[in-house]
Image 1 (cartoon, rainbow over the protein chains, first blue to last red):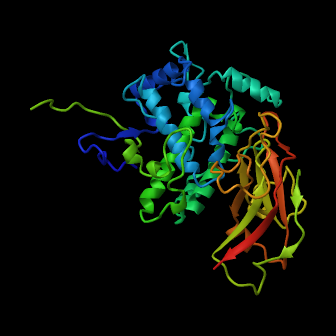
Image 2 (cartoon, rainbow over the protein chains, first blue to last red):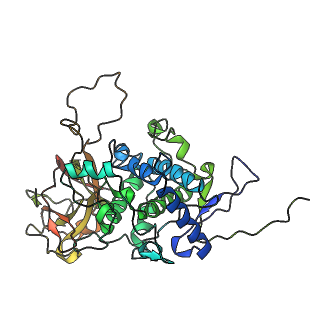
Image 3 (tube, rainbow over the protein chains, first blue to last red):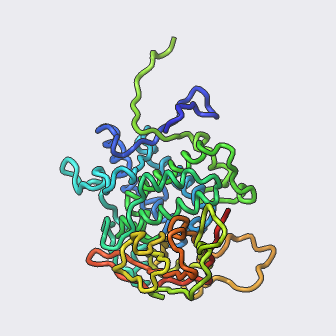
Length: 273
Length: 149
């Protein structure tokens, strides 16, 4: 789906491309895992637990302003943007991969292996912030302090199909599009289950970010298909706390330095003339 | 509520009614403070329950899914949505538990119903590792069936 465009702000600098998790090279996947693992080892606000906690517990649950609201897509675009920057602080060229659940109808293999080369796979599970566990437990939650999944449990809504997503992408109005897409997004959360299944703990599961990269990609695809569609004007100046961005600043993924492709590889240039 | 069954409504797809290109079933004031669940919608299937399949032949029209809060982790009052007029100088975003609107596109499902009356049944289902269950979490203010030319 890549446009192959250069950055609109830095014409000589290529955009970074988020790639399909199932199409990453071994080196790309290793770098991504190293970045996630590195974030998990940081206990301050650059770390995995802090960033995951922005979405849910511990309080405040910042995503609350976004779900069921037209800023659902802008808020989560900003969220992934900053999360990805912290990944790149550890591994310079890493981008967030996306999980195309319309074609890969299982938890992707990269997230489903408990161990990799004799080491725990950081994409398989993550420790949950102890304060989040404590606050959830006070409400009776017993999910535990390490993320787990129950994919496709009995009664789970099915993963969205390619046909369903095509129908959503064809909707001409933004409000209609985001409303229907958010519902399919909800289905995937509940299908994965476990910590992903409810707002307070969802972002602690590493697969959260691959799921939301897919959602963000679909928004990008919709924007390309409906170039004249407008975002509700009254919301353009809305702040997206805690990110220090407004809705307007999230509308063009290219100005944030990225786009989406299925696969990508990079070759060296000739160097200086 | 574990299962919602509406009173019979005039069916906008009944014989003699105007044609439509799209039909929506819109739920207003939907609560999302509890657990996540899928609200399965059936048309003219008032006995639908957990075991009723998601098949058009069974009256299945679609669903909406609540990505829920699973309770309130704050102190007393933290999740209470303020009522009454809002201070015009209060620029805080809407309260986090402000209820939502959910739209289920039911165009094809409604076209299959030709009875003069329409009944809406909503079965809220929470999946489980051992077995699914209906969940007492379906709360909304009202619904509308809307058709568009």
